[in-house]
Amino acid sequence: MQGLVSLAGRTNNPLPHDLPLRIGGFGGVEGLVHYLKDATITHVIDATHPFAATISVNAQKACELLGLPFLTFTRRPWGAIPGDRWIEVQDASLAINALGVAPRRVFLGVGRQAAINFRDAPQHSYLLRVIDPPQDRELPLECEIIIGRGPFALENELALLQEHKINVVVSKNSGGVIGYTKIIAARQLGLEVIMISPPKCNSSLVAYDYDTAMKFLAA
Image 1 (cartoon, rainbow, N blue to C red):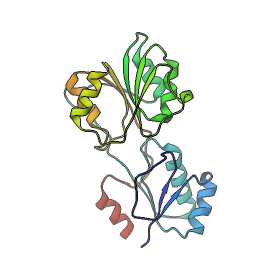
Image 2 (tube, one colour):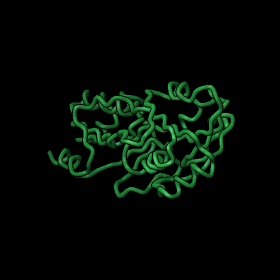
Image 3 (cartoon, rainbow, N blue to C red):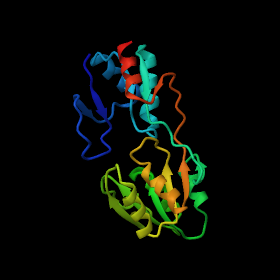
């Protein structure tokens, strides 16, 4: 069985892959249907970011139209444990409401695309960590940028939050291990975390580990 990795192209320098790689969109469900047919794809694994809802929905619809086996391969969401001070919300606008009106020092763990939403709360000062440099128009008015790609060591996350005098963390619940150290650091420092829940997954087949995904391909 041969494989292909498809990336949206959101990151300028994606990590290398052992499989052939294509970058770019498909043109919605119709475009994806044509691509899957032309490329004689037999199985589709949706391994996109948990918050990449549009391509996940489109991929599932395309597979339903073609009768192709479809699996969502995703990270298990984080859950609050004793010591966490979480406020769980459904989207960025509710996260902004949860920040309140008083000025705060906010660490934004929401990615470059979602950062623009926080322009609606200009009273806060933000620290945003991203993989690629954003444009000024994509940022809150008072926002410091850090360029970096995880995973990040816990001691570095603790130092970062303390150095910048962060008093609240806003994070997408992306699950997995790579971004979790900032949540551990917030817990150890007693910081509030405003946690944005991922979109609901409607896939009938979901895998959280590599072995389960491989069994899907072998079926």
